[in-house]
Length: 313
Image (cartoon, rainbow, N blue to C red; front, top):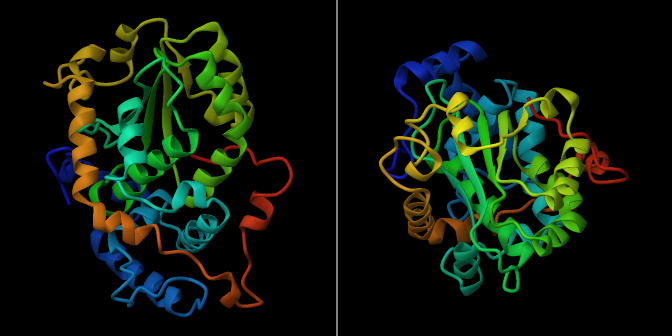
């Protein structure tokens, strides 16, 4: 579903994505039917036929695409997606974009997709603290806003090839870093259990020396292949060497006819339009009391001991 805040890749770009993954719109529709039938047979997972707990077919298609058209990998991710919510309610419960807590964190932080995709169909995401003042910054709420934005893209609003993260450290203070580091283990475990992700690149700008421990910790989690896609830029101007200017807003050296603040405001309005959907989604979780004995909970290995290397393509 294309909106004014999120333009989809061109039909030719989408067809190219399908071709690279060996699928098509017809095959995706067939695979979605297979996944829904599989979910009906999993008593611990939400029933896709339940009118009160709508399972968006768009979510199933997006999971399939990001899982490289593998039904088995998609089944694992769907199981994890609904199960991880039980382990991290501070991130996945009470999703209401109009609540005082979320409205406040929207003023302090953003995790926002840029409206235009790249020519390859990648989606660029801006991750930025909006003010150096960390006194009112609630870490769990900022993670919740990330997951809300990611979830509605996956389930309703977006089609894309891979993700490109633009991490702007301009207002990141020592107090922010101090709040992030102790929690980063659970956040990484949660996001990569809940969502399949394919990262094309991570571009970091406006760093300071005290941000380095956070960057180094993040790099230590990543597989070498993924860590090699992290670029710490000396200036915003360098971004145009990696991201088409038509995607970047005016204040990031691009030609998209809005500033990042205008794009952020538009996206937050978009989130608020889907308030009822968010409230419903945050209540859809697995019921492990109904999990069959022979059902393998893949989170057992992912969430215990030292956390896994960042496993994204």
